Amino acid sequence: MARDTGAREMTVKEAGRRGGEAVKTKYGQEFYSKIGQAGGKAVAKSRGTSFYVEIGRVGGEAVKRTRGPEFYSEIGRKGGEAVRAKHGTEYYSRIGKHGSRIRRRDA
Image (cartoon, rainbow, N blue to C red; front, side, top):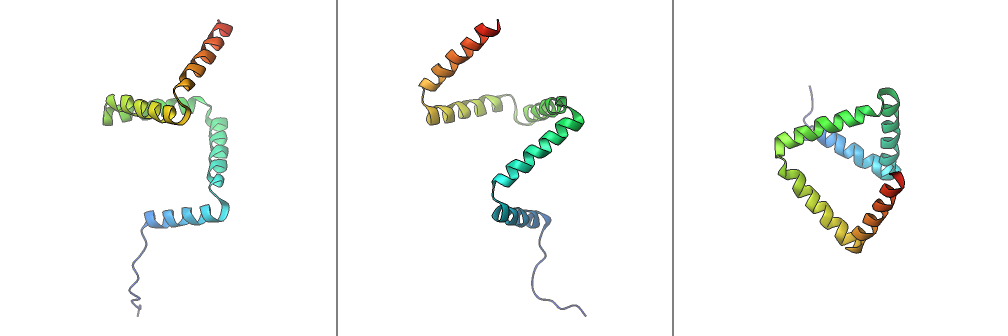
């Protein structure tokens, strides 16, 4: 006869979260970056870099259908505000001049 300990079963989602936290504690957050890069290189080697172009296009179209084109305007605005807060307004002038030099050189 099974004994009821009163403990509930863990969901798959909770088990994954707890496992991820255990790995992060043991190996550090940088571990995920390293394995992600290794995985990305392996995929690019087996499927080619065009694979990333295609999944980006498909994902972008899905987001546009789901959230509408205004979503991109909003995240662009938020990203620009974050860059301005981090680097200051003169940053845009600096990168604009840098881009201009590159375009002239490549022309």
